[in-house]
Amino acid sequence: MPTRIDHIITSGVFSLDGEDFDVDNNIWLVGNDDEVLVIDAAHDHRPILDGIGGRKVSGIVCTHAHNDHINAAADLAEATGAPILLHPDDSMLWEVIYPDRRIDNELADGQVLTVGGVEVEILHTPGHSPGGVSLHVASERTVFSGDTLFNGGPGATGRSFSSHQLLVESITKKLLVLDEATVVHTGHGDSTTIGAEIPNVK
Image (cartoon, rainbow, N blue to C red; front, side, top):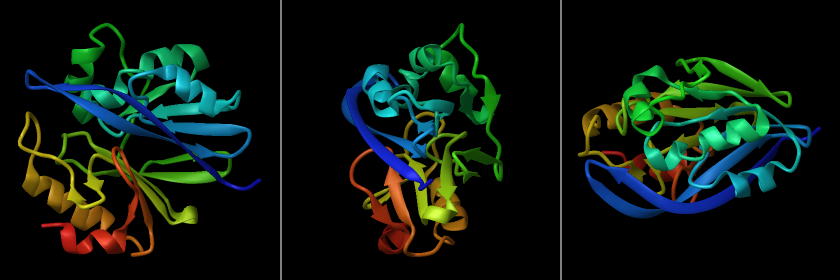
């Protein structure tokens, strides 16, 4: 059965450090026609359920725990029965949104998740947030970068728990070493490739 990647966009508010911003978020579904992994459950779980379309959800992976990437995760988990996965270094951000709901499983660098016969490797890419991760699907020459790497360069820093120096180091060591043809599916905005972003990482 061929690998399937679906794309959903939801809109809402990103809140951090006492400021609010209107944002559009990319949600990615990777798997096949029977089973799917959800990458970032943002704003409203209902369009995500429509995209899932009755498939089994093997997990809801949060690339990081800023509110705009997790604020539909609990509702989606309740609707699907799927576990929520997050790197533990972002637990303090998670607890701001969900003080009474713990994640189900922790992510770790080098961990491999299998969904619909597809291997998805977790790459710990801190900098935008301490527990930020990217998900590499080598068989599809694809990486899901969350807010680590965008079309145009590194993700935002300068806010709580972020570090531009650490982010550039993460991108350089974990992402720019991938095949330059690797497609980068981002947390916001248009997709890009590793090769296109090499000049933009500084």
